[in-house]
Image 1 (cartoon, rainbow, N blue to C red):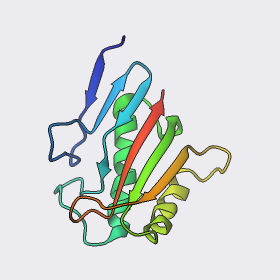
Image 2: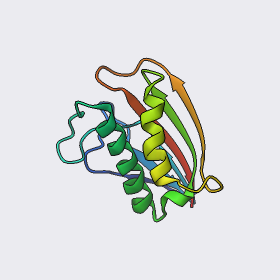
Image 3: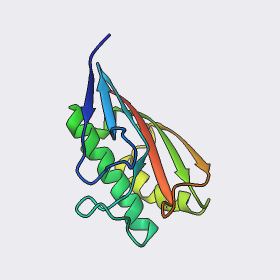
Length: 126
């Protein structure tokens, strides 16, 4: 089995002792990524900035792993309000404009840690 490589991303830290992402062989997995500000680590006041930060972190993780967002195979998105899917779709279409070259995605509405409105988990194949 390949050795696990922990990927540390500035601004994306967990409250628990878990990494933001790991790479094992040609696979990349994330924990729940939150949309905190990359410079301050604080959550933005509006959901648009929170989601924009999430997509920023996905780009950063893929670059650290030696890949690009074209290598993302699946996203699990959690939102606290069904209307936030529309906000996610704005960034989604910027990152994946080609309808024939998008990862699979599943979105659920659920309670998240206090203050969070959206979080994403990602799986990629390099």
